[in-house]
Length: 208
Image (cartoon, rainbow, N blue to C red; front, top):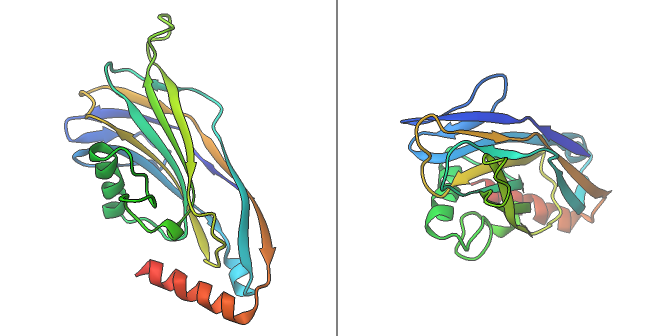
């Protein structure tokens, strides 16, 4: 199964980035973060008491990351979560990344529960200094996968792209994020009653 996330072009203003329609990217006032929220509908499996067992997840985003400012770096988190993230939780991810850049969501000392993060992809982008003809091109300096890979019996698997700047961009700086597709290779299984009920119990606990 797969799910698409649209591209974004955001321009910073004094109180935060303004993102044009028709995309549904969002920003957090006072924090240099933009994000997009989508979900994969698993309700058909949930109705039949079936469990989704992730085998592999890929993020496809052919295109380039562009930024009109200078002297800035940012990171991109692509996340599949068993629970929908609140604005406060996305704010916590942004603050944690800015103050403790060694801890991704679900990792030690990082925000959120490890079991909640089924899949994560972290990428760090820095200014292009090698190709003088493309000063706005941002280069990927580091790529790391994370997450629990846990089976899930939730109705929705929430997909996020979260872009976090280390420092607040200047007014009128723009950032361009290419479209992306989450490709989930999974097995659908029928578990025994007890493991399935325990999985539902754990999902309920994560939602509280």
